[in-house]
Amino acid sequence: MMHVLVGGAVLKKTPPVLEELRWESISIEEILSLATTASLLGDTQAYKFDGALASTRGEEFLDASKVLAQSPHTFIFVEEKLLKKPTDILTKAGAEIVAAKKEAKEEKESFNVFALTYAFAAKDKKKLWLLFADALREGVVPEAIAGILHWKVRDLYSKRQFKGSGGVYTEHELRAYSGALVTLYHDSHRGAGDLGVLLERFILLL
Image 1 (tube, rainbow, N blue to C red):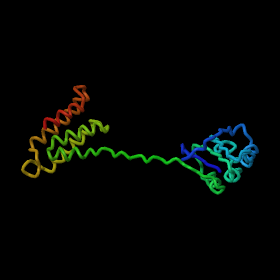
Image 2: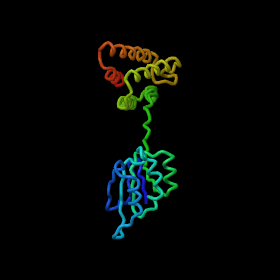
Image 3: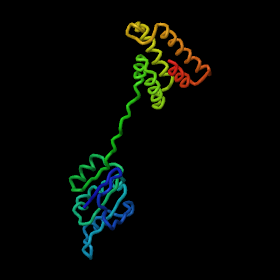
Image 4: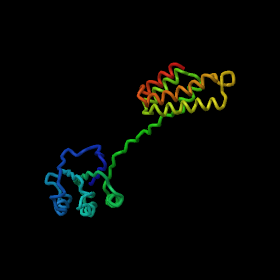
């Protein structure tokens, strides 16, 4: 029998006696002889090759695959990858191909910075601070946070969503917050403080 293990796959049950052979130094005639010669004691042997199918002698092993697959002995080929043509040939010959299962990578969703604007518009200081901390932890730069908050302030002001007219901030507060965010941004770039720290202080003082 012939097993082809691809990409780190392993056999569920490995033969107890496994002899590793170097494909570089053994002829195909010797391999075919091993495949067709019965043991004197009637038991079977197991042989392992690393990278033989992807080597310069790959065609030789493919040509011999039917004999190896029908052998009472076990021939294990370990390969990093296996192209379609060799796969088709080996499958037709009766070889068992076992490929390692690829672990599904969980796609990490990027942080939704607009969530900050919703918390700000609702004047939910606790939620805004928690989202701010999450944003920094997820790698969102403080400049982006300052920019999105300033955009929301201007959006609320342009729509005249003031306190008493569907909003929670007075016109004066929105004017002040707009100026404060611009000042924080420029102060941090002049070396007056870390923008992340300045933004956190801004949020806590809302």
